Image (cartoon, rainbow, N blue to C red):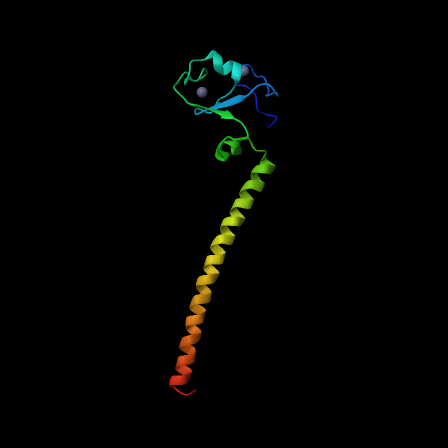
Length: 115
Ligand SMILES: [Zn+2]
Ligand SMILES: [Zn+2]
């Protein structure tokens, strides 16, 4: 996990034996601090919240918050180029279709006016 990640209550960084959770209010807790609070209530905000365990299996949108800036740029530049390639392919196919139609009309006009 990124070097800036720490438990918002005991300020311990993550280590192999601890798991960390993220609350819907944006706080990060180690598992022992999380157990100190009430279920579904943030110890800091003291408001109802839900928690997500941070692991390799966590939703990638949540994992993205913990990516390094390098990793973040890589992820989104890959996604952006994938999407723009996808759209470009469709655009090209449509243009090719119209080009074909234009050529057919041209040929028809040549034939019609015996040019
Ligand atoms: Zn803690
Ligand atoms: Zn909170």
